[in-house]
Image 1 (tube, each protein chain N blue to C red):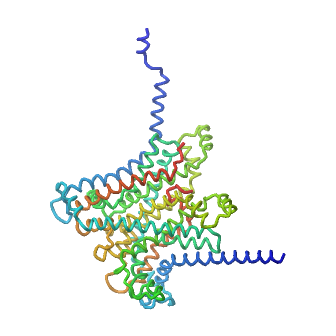
Image 2 (image 1 turned 180 degrees about the vertical axis):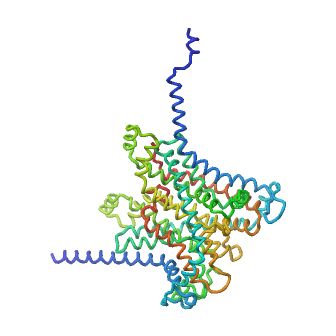
Image 3 (image 1 turned 135 degrees about the vertical axis):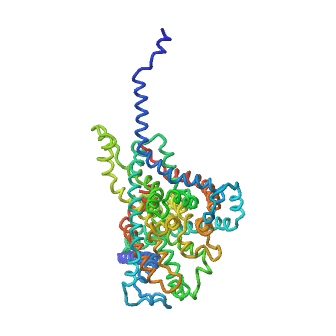
Length: 312
Length: 282
């Protein structure tokens, strides 16, 4: 009897429930699918193809198409001093620009957090460098601002004993970094300012009542409070700044020599001047691997900073 | 009595002078940051002969001739930029709204992984795949086409938009959704009559952020377009000739190319922070 009972079909309700929950699962997945498939196709396939080409010799200015060359592209990448140089330069440029922009951003945010005459206008003026088209900014810095013969900067610095300095020849890397900082300080300012303005006023009042000085309050209370905002700014700033291309291409064209060549510009040259798809792909794969290492840490940071609000 | 008033007055004075100090400092910093922009706009109004002088000229007869010149050459580039920007922004919203819904309101099981997948694509440097991207575009006959630019700009902005829209959707009160469900509203009606009306300001600011990034993009454009889909940043590059005077012309072109996004950004200041932080900061 019991055996027969066991062989009996499971109660209808359970089947329906399971089917319903599967149906519900798909109904939930359905709206996500277009974006997911789109992103996988457009952003992941190029990387798979990159992996493929990194093992091929392929110059698109030469007939014959691609053929397998094993690891030779990688050997070239690792022995290419320009690649190593641009890797180091990318790190230096990104780190310097992000750190200085963040320090300035904190200072400006503190300034903007006070009430003063024309605060709205000041804020508007300060965020403008971030909004100007980067290509436009780079070109305007390159000539009207930094030209040795008629540039505005030399004129403004003349009272300090600066002559006709050819900034882009003598201080190329510094000039590019300054422009990066100029463009990204507003970004940091806005993020830190949002943090400052969300700080509960009572804690600051309490500190004041306890007789804490302004600087001590800032160091002991405000700065720790701002920490997630600062981390977020550094993280997002790095994501964008490591890809800086416009300023390099349009201010110095990577030079003089290779003194301002960063990774994006290096790859641009590989593809556009050397026509070396295989070499560029191998370099790309190396860059992606390095990025994945950094991004793993970055994603963990992201999870902490965002302190995920639970979905419903 | 007199001592207290004197003390009070001196404190008031100190406060006032402190206030004035902050004001002056803030304005000075703002002007330093704004000078390059100001110089660009000012130079754009100069005749070419007044743009490359030493010392630089601050007083001159303004002329619109360089603007006129810039506008005449700009036509196709401007059209391409507008189509690529608007097209990609619309596509981003169409894809991001349902995706954000599936990651917040009625979440899929692994919504966290989904969110991280999208953000991780922002960390992969697209520059690394530029060569193969060129080859793919070549074989797909998409090289130098606006369609390609729309496809790529959509992929570039989609993660940002999903994160941002999701943060707006999480702010829709649960009771409202509950009430709609009790009224028998399905997913479509829940979206159409409750969620979308409530997050529409959020959608506008998401769109603005997408517009800013697409409008200003150069790397993909310079690598994958020549003439048929060349955007405004490419026009700027073409306005720098190998020889001859070009500074005023360049500044006029740069001003025109920058103005739309600068104005959009000025108007959207409040939502800028939220967009740039991908919804992390309210």
